[in-house]
Amino acid sequence: MLGVVRNEILTVYHRFRELDPKLVPTVMTGQQPSTIIMPMEKITKMPELKENPFKERICKVFSHDGSGNMTFDDFLDMLSVFSEQASRSVKLHYAFRIYDFNGDSLITEEDIEQVVIALTRNELSQDEIKIVCEKVLEEADMDDDKAISQTEFQHVISRAPEFIK
Image 1 (cartoon, rainbow, N blue to C red):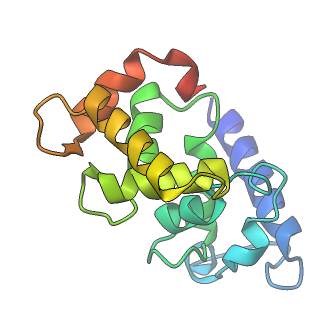
Image 2 (image 1 turned 180 degrees about the horizontal axis):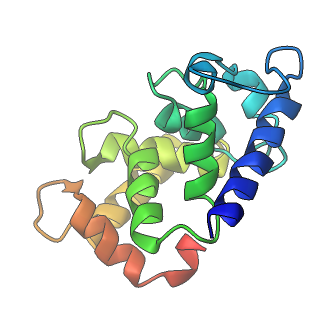
């Protein structure tokens, strides 16, 4: 099993190095996995992220300092969460963090508005966005506190299993 994990880490390392071969040495040693910083602009050009409306938000959530720039350790965490082997609970945890734009551990109307704008590429009017936000809260906010908690988010997503594939 250890050989499988080692091979997976090496595969991710090669992906990281491909983003900027001049920045990342052929072999990393010591503290390099946590000190070499890959700029977010290079990470968001990966085929898996290039068209994702949340690509910058994803990078910020997984970067150790919230900047979107990543160490190899950050990059490994990100690809691990998005792999098929990651548990549903881990995927849900990070999906919640990605949608929690202001980092207050709740998905508020402001967070939902940013999600809607990203998903619709800013093609809805402000009134339409407000209606969508109200409907989302109406559906997901079980305790009527005008926000979606991690528990409420998990409950809603459990009814949409295709969300976390």
